[in-house]
Amino acid sequence: MLSFLPLLLFNALIACTAARSDYHERLLLRPLPQSALLASFTFRSNESSGAFEEQNFRYFPRSLGQILQHAHTKELHLRFSLGRWDASNWGQMPWNGAREGGTGVELWAWVEAGTEEEAFSRWLALTNALSGLFCASLNFIDATKTIRPVMSFQPEGDHHNMSRLHLLHGTLPHEVVCTENLTPFLKLLPCKGKAGISSLLSGHKLFDASWQTMSIDVRPVCQKEGDCAVEIEQGVDMVLDLERAKRPLDNPIPRPLPIEEISCDGSKPYNAPDTCYPLTRTADSSWSLNEVFGTSLHGACPLTDDRDGNSHTVCINVQPEREIQVKTAGEYDESRSASETLRCYKLPVGEAFDLVLPEQQMTTGLVLPTPPLYAARSINGHGQERGSVQAVIRNPSTTDAVEFIYLESLPWFMKPYLHTLRAVIDKSEGNPVKETYYRPAVDRRRGSHLELRVVIPADSSLSLTYDFDKAILRYTEYPPDANRGFDAAPAVIRLLSPRPPDRKGVYTRTTSLLLQLPTPDFSMPYNVIILTSTVMALAFGNIFNLLVRRFVGADEVPSRRGLRTILQGKLERFKSLVKGP
Image (tube, rainbow, N blue to C red):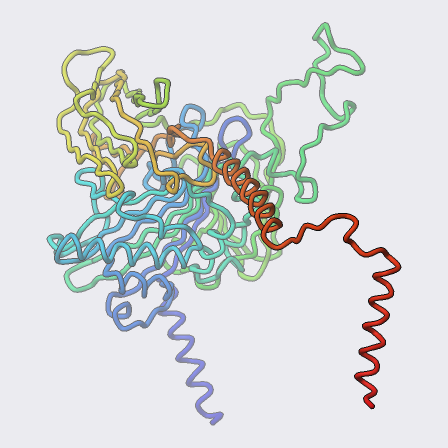
């Protein structure tokens, strides 16, 4: 028995070495203006198609793989998002918006099926299974919240037979993303938040961010004919307020500092011992991974690839003059880009790792990429019968026109009128809409689906407006918080030109809308029920008393002494019966 032990250990070592190159992870940090920090976590692993079919999973999560096989899903994209990306202050969205999702939950997938009915049946099986896996309300994505986009999404994977693939898209803008969605997300990772960059992911910090999104992308990848694999890429992107994030967990309520600890501007005429106007901070504040994320990085994940030159796990994008200190008891390696704006570090295994950036006066500012488009959307009008939607999209480029696809998925009770659609360019004439696809809503069966292919000239803004009617719901269709309003999913914008740098594309999403519908006073049924119950109780009580009670005169009622005598006589009689003759 002992002679087989070295062989088993050797086989296990070979298996781990062979599979080591199938998993990569990386953390990219990028400071933003106004004391903000962008943290982008990326986890990517591959699984060969043969091992996937044989249920021989290594780094690909088995729970998700079996769901995709059962639902015949060839490509999957799932997003959990919260907050709003401030493009005017933070610049272009990370990863060109390819990992962004609309507020709440957004899901789109390519499902293999012979007919549309079969594809929708498998889509429902997929949403119900994912709902249980991620502890989310994905099972509420029914026919009224599902559309079939025509131009807005393109497959990112390598598919050999697109004729049998059906694209379906669903959103839940009212879904609240919280810690119960993060825990299943971490369980899909090989190191499960115990080591590597995933050890920094804490629910307290992630959901305290100004903006955050969790993404899961599954796609087939083929290097050559017959050599295909299934790739899963998980990502977490969040924008943290450094001053707020550095506050300890035992002090969740921000409290002002004592006045003697605040640097005051003495040049102000109203400056006094009890009045302070704080000085504008010109130096970059100090921070560290331990302060921002509440814990140190627990070393490298042992399963991360360290052979192909892609082993530098933590990268930070700062000015070349920015001072960075490394605190760790293990060995690490640092590499810098040619411009020295990107610094990457190879983590030690089994040792804590921390980056410390002291307070420093900078001479160069942050360089932020300009977004290809700025988009905003709002509801106009008043009253409970109708309204209008206005989307303002601006092209900041002074030289190039931008062509894009504009997608809106509206609930069935929000009924737009296509003949009222107006697209106006502020600095030119002509119709910027080149192609239109519209599928009207059917009450309680499907929502409205609108796609537009639009071209905006350089340095111009597009105003897109249309009118809609508000439907009246049945009282059982109102949610418990009916007076809050109903959420409409954000619009999705996919850029066509300039040509995207990769197959993932360039995306931008607007904010969601809050729609006010005619809402009855739900307190009235309660009042009616209470009043009716009271009247019925009084009527029943009086009628019951009249039927069962016997009314006699006051002189016919026996006195207290006579009643006592009667009771005593009956008691004596009962005793005589018990004793017998």
